[in-house]
Length: 559
Image (cartoon, rainbow, N blue to C red):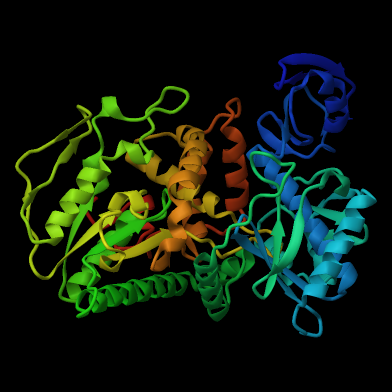
């Protein structure tokens, strides 16, 4: 008999070898206080599906769709139902689940005859999805040799999955079936389609939007948010992926194996520099305009988007335009630490807008733009106090102010300054490379990998510590950054097509240091699993001015 400890209630019970997680849950269900239906579990801190069978003593923690791994299992399963429905309604069609947008998932859909997608088509697909859910069609998992899995997908014309598996270096691979439809996913699914009660499918731009449950209340749909500028940024990146013939991990790996890594790096860096030059030239044009000239550049973005390096590269290009950029850090306008707002657990909430003396900052900005000399503060992070050390600033006629920080686009920060005087920039690593046509790479995973590597290289935090802080980081972004991103005049994508191959070289040993007995191991294991799909390459070809250098080290900029 096995001894299984349920971490939800800290009760241990005995079970026969080979018992499924679903049967284990039934034994513990009365003692588990979860307000929503269970969709998956963590076994020794590793995410598993409820059909997973136990053959050794284990710790088990059951998850609903609010928790990260549970939410991913739910969405992943829903994507398979969508794919199954598209094949049933439109045999031979192609589905590309590309990225998150508007709190849902954008899906590009191509009929076999290349006719445009209509609203009626989307309704037909949604109706078939509902039929699959209503009959509770089961998901079945198969473990096969990599060669067998490749054969299964080659017969079905899945070149994306074939390329991924051919270059993954795996000996065995799992694949799933839903009815007579096969697909590949790099994580577990729910036992059957009947678990998927909350979803919607609707026309969106030239494709479809798959809407999913709210993170905090999975019994309702996540509220749709209009994000046209963000969608356009994704579309621009996808266009360049097509030009470079890179849309998934298999394409990247094949290019690396053919010796094209250096060329891919050079082209990716050139595209980013071209975009920065365009932004600098637009700022210069509007700075010199006779009507409503701008005097203030505001830059924001979520954690590990590369804001600092972007600011430095933009400043170089502004200098090349004949302007003199002057940067002011919002950090220097922090309130004294004792006056900082606190989180419910008593920790200081440094991400709160009230942690910044924004009225003082706005007063200084206004006076500087009028040509006055202003003594600006410097924040002493040791004493936790704002200090005045005689640092006085006066702008020249060709100077332009740059403010970079998480609150830069928050209207409170510059509410008394006319919008015509501001140029707002939003930056993020909007990953466009997918593992394959149905397995996207979350933007937040891209940024989390960057942050883990940077924190470790600086000696600031271990991988375990960075992962443990990540939820608070994401919650702060949801509250203080994302609501204002669509107000930006321009958006900049800092993601590189080849960066996961570079990040793997740095991240493997760092992630491997996370111990299996800590909760953070779940995310460390998941990140390790997905970066192993990319063939690793050295960072020696990454230029010293690259945004990537902010995370892997070796930048020529002073931070």
